Length: 149
Image 1 (cartoon, rainbow, N blue to C red):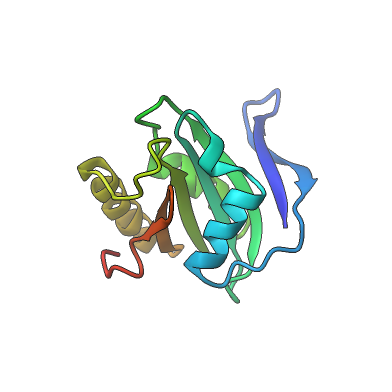
Image 2 (cartoon, rainbow, N blue to C red):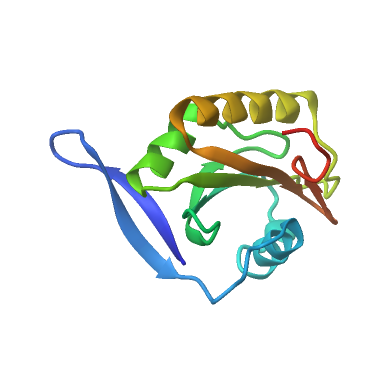
């Protein structure tokens, strides 16, 4: 599993550049993802919201991680365009979105609920499943586990 960044060519065509290799971390459950976010990305220690995209293959194996957004103390932008552009460029069949709440309160806001619904609908249209939308804080909130997506 690698981190990736997206760049634009001289012709303004998006392309991906592989970053650092992540330690062999299993991400088969929301708890596994929560542990990785804390151990690798130190999500509990960040003073602003960050949003990460985990892309997966058809066997639900995480193949890449992107930092999509770095926001303020109480918000970060997420749009379906940025999520699914990266997912399609990596050939992913499914994705998960994870973001931190610097307050460490993992309960979702109305904005979190709204964007999770929009991402689920966009993914269904494109044939790329949103398998989870997670918020990490002291613990985690999984929209999948709560039956919200």
